[in-house]
Image (cartoon, protein in one colour):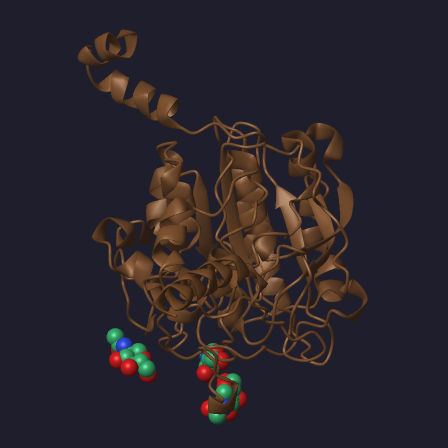
Length: 402
Ligand SMILES: *[C@@H]1O[C@H](CO)[C@@H](O)[C@H](O)[C@H]1NC(C)=O
Ligand SMILES: *[C@@H]1O[C@H](CO)[C@@H](O)[C@H](O)[C@H]1NC(C)=O
Ligand SMILES: *[C@@H]1O[C@H](CO)[C@@H](O)[C@H](O)[C@H]1NC(C)=O
């Protein structure tokens, strides 16, 4: 009632309502992840701009990308799997595959994707030319995970949340940046078509105004990361740096040696806002430790196979370009509890429970899979109860008939 009255007063109420509508998190009210391209941990950690930023944040020293090349890493970060993808070509993922967008919207957490030089909101083309003179390679679809998921592109209001850096800057100036933000700079600023130094210089310049105490009114956590390492022959070890006014002052300038992958973005969001899970590799992924500590999440552990993790080759799956390595999209595991202490999102369960009973590789163990030493193991245990039930029915029918 009080809010209604306030709202009658006029424009000011819109601002008040917007602030009130912000979903409070345990450790932050906003999470911004910014993706750079193709650098090894050792080189980035030694860079002077990164060293300078590190003084204001937490360096994650054991963060691994999932595979090569770029695109599967981006796709994995929003959906908890890359479905066997091993290339950067155009792909499209069917509508029954849910993403972080479904988890966030179910709890009214606002979100956006911002991609530098994207020519228009919801643009679904393969690439677009910006102002760098890079010959059509400024905005690229392969660095924008949202537009490859039909569950996002089939809804106009979701497409409208995918826009350019110019739109981000306007939202920042108006103090209206959504609560979850995924950003990819263009192919020059992210280092893809330039150099390590170009990308770190760009990052330093871009981040400075965002990491002051006053930049955001709400606690904002920024994760600057790389999609993958540069050297294919070595384990896919990358730098990720946590920054922003949500970092507790005592932790600024520290390191965190917990094992992470891009799936930790999903589990961290789940722990922070009490979100449901996707029933894929998001379940069991370690939560950024300081967030886990604040959220009271005690599920972080060393993956059982951490010593052999390589993450340089894609495992088989629907999107693999080698036809001998194609497998259907696995059924999510409908029986896991995620870092948000909740089961799978009810709409995902509804979409898959009556569907094809393909076996699932997702077990919530936090084990790491790749196409080399650690192939996913598909097991039927998850659908055991359903199978037993139908078997039981069959037996009853058979008994009745004899
Ligand atoms: C699959 O994609 C990779 C990476 O782009 C490429 O090197 C390879 O030739 C492709 N294989 C097929 C069978 O198209
Ligand atoms: C993007 O590339 C794919 C595959 O090469 C092609 O089928 C599609 O038409 C392209 N899209 C646009 C908008 O050019
Ligand atoms: C940028 O990268 C793309 C993809 O790897 C490549 O085809 C293109 O030639 C590069 N452009 C420049 C100017 O280096």
